[in-house]
Image 1: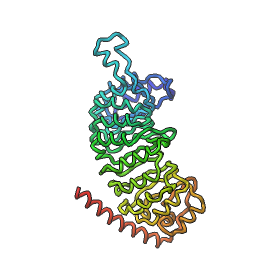
Image 2: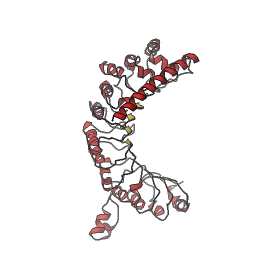
Image 3: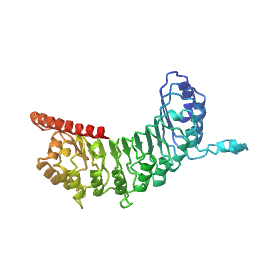
Image 4: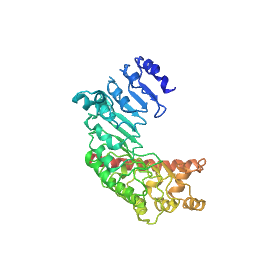
Length: 394
């Protein structure tokens, strides 16, 4: 609906006693303020709220609401949250009111009575340097933090590190594909130092967090992560970070690598060119990598076939749950399939998807497929037993 007509609908929605999810999607910078309509309502049962666009006035209106059941807040097009909340200072208010008026939209959110109860916070297009304005919050229950399209840099990572988020499980601080952040290993070091080494984080998404033209920046980020224990990590996305093959070698050394279920190395054009094959050989020897790993290499080097030929014989490679690769030259693809190793096995079981090309139906004989599946299950059970024993030792 047009934003200028949303007031009556917001007011009507606020009168629904069991409303659990509500969304307002605006029309850009020219959209009128809907904060007054929000402020007039009662939102006792609301659990999930999604708003766009969001500026300081909308943030102030949100902060004034009683939303005792709110658990998830998503604010899209939140680039103006770093601006001050208008009010008392402009009207000649006293010192206390002027201080309140000078608060940013982000600070207003942090002071909201419902903020401590949030388990999920998603901010799109915001100034990450000003995320430090949330520092005064009591966000001890926050489990999912997503700050998208934020031009991530080391200063922003340091600001995030100053927040107290002891229960955080999922962290997304990446960028969209039309741009890149400026994160280096210094920013990662700040995050590791600020949150107890990301001890509880299970999903870490840093897509496009490093600029490809910053030579070695992405490799440095991966090296810093690989040197940390990260005991809970199960999913890592470092796509579009300008990685080279050196990153593969660092991941192979990482203590957390055997526990990964998802690894996204896609959109790194130099990764897989095999100018130095040693990192891929190291990865091939990393026998403790988890069975059923989902590995994404989409958008990597067109010369990826050589790297794949190195790791195709590894036991973990044959047990991949899925493999996504860029479009390869026909002769390279044919050579890989002719090896009759792990790659061909994955193809016949429909576990390989190639950029642009689509694989056909599985041509594996049913008895052969069942035999391979049984072997995989036995291998996975053995690896899981080792993993559980290791966790027990910890």
